[in-house]
Amino acid sequence: MELPHFLIADNTDQPDSLFVVHTQYPRFVWNISNDELEWFDELEGEEEELINEVTSLMETAEAFYEREMQRHEAEIS
Image 1 (cartoon, rainbow, N blue to C red):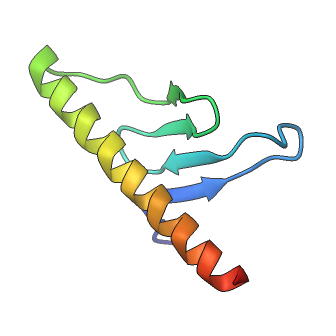
Image 2 (image 1 turned 90 degrees about the horizontal axis):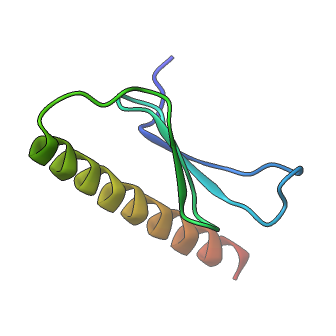
């Protein structure tokens, strides 16, 4: 099975939270509601390289979230 790079997730135990899940290295879950980030993989490399990689991943995750929310809004309108 080929997983998408990003998924939107929610959980009834946390009804006020919405999550973006990154399924490829480095895997993480980002709680959109409170901006918490949980990494599943240890990040390795030079500090500057890691900062650039994380910044790029978070920008991509945010763009994914915004696109998904726009599509959702269009579906319910």
